[in-house]
Each structure stands twice: as structure tokens, then as C-alpha cells.
Amino acid sequence: MYDAGWSAFVGMLEYKAVKHGRTFAEVDRAFPSSQVCSACGFRDGRKPLHVREWTCGECHAVHGRDHNAARNVLFEGRRIVAAGRVETRDACGVPVRGAHVPAQRVEAGSPRKGQTAQAGIPGL
Image (cartoon, rainbow, N blue to C red; front, top):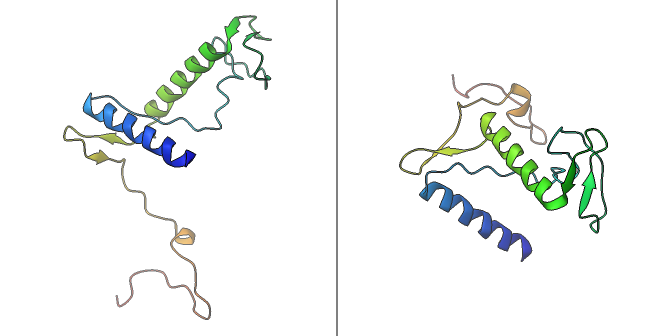
């Protein structure tokens, strides 16, 4: 049930982004947003949940855990958009993807039991 609720929430965010002409980028759930200093980028390591404020071991900036994580998520989202890895939509709201990249020969399929794999279009 949790996954369905999260999926619905993400769907609503995407819908609202399109409606208001915004770009929606989803950051990987394993992204270490609370472990990285938003000032210098130093990864300071895991912290127990009761640690609400911490000082960067590299630049000595003092961070509130949630504020720092929010800034890192914003920066990561912007990086994803800049790298062109987000699905954008045209003026009508239709998804627009980057150029089609064909599968490599080794990715194109797998042989079935007792049959050999054939490359190319059958009958040509």
C-alpha cells in the first residue's frame, strides 16, 4: 500500500508540474542527501536520526539536517535536468524523450531453448 500511495503522490507532482509549465525530476531514493555538505560537497558519512544539526568536517559549515538535505535534493534535481536525464513534455503536455538509442547486438534478445539467436530482420 505504501508504494501505491507514493506512486500516486509522485503522479500528482508530475501532473502539477506539467500544468504549471515546470520540469519534474525524481531524485534516486538512495541519494545521500543528509550525508553531503551542501556548501562544499564533502560527504561526511551517515548520521543517526537524532542528529538534527552537524558541522562539516571539511569546511566547518554548520548545517540543519533537513535544510541541508533539501538543498542537496534541489542541487541533484537541477543536475539531473541539466544532464538531460529527465523526461520533458512539450507545450501540449506530451512526453518528449531524447533521441532513440538502438539496443546493442548483445542486448537485442536472448536465444530460446534449442534455438540459436539470429541478428537482423527475418526474411531479408
